[in-house]
Length: 208
Image (cartoon, rainbow, N blue to C red; front, top):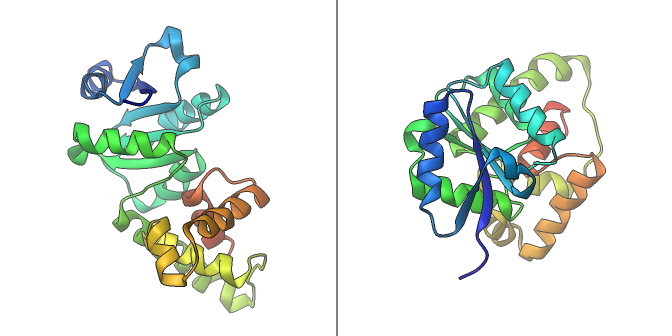
């Protein structure tokens, strides 16, 4: 068995926090850490009914503490919250009714490995939301920001459609390593946190 992933669970609601901790505590691949051992955590799981201002501040506080791999369990999410959540550093998101121990554990392990995952329908909503802004505001004024290569655009568009690294590699006839390197290059160049943040940024800036 490999090393267990140290994970920190938090919610402003003590009952929700206890529920998340109880789900994670008995997973053999995870190790729940307490407030006193927050420095040991690799991934944080934050539970909230909605991603309101206090929740976004919690996410910001965790990032300031050095925890930049955050999974958000949320009761509901509207279109206006999507970019805020991604820019707050969330690399995994799951709705509360879908947050089974197995799915939550999978998200934590993916986050620990540096992967990001949003539900496909939310990526689609994000795409529509920001594309609407591009079409309604920028395009009529002849505006469109450049900065991405054709290969970067192709890869980010497939990320936005919910494809994982291996699927993108297969569709574009690249190696998975090439896809990862391209995404790493984009996130490094624009000082972004993960591939979901890269998609949100590229969409909002009219790059894809």
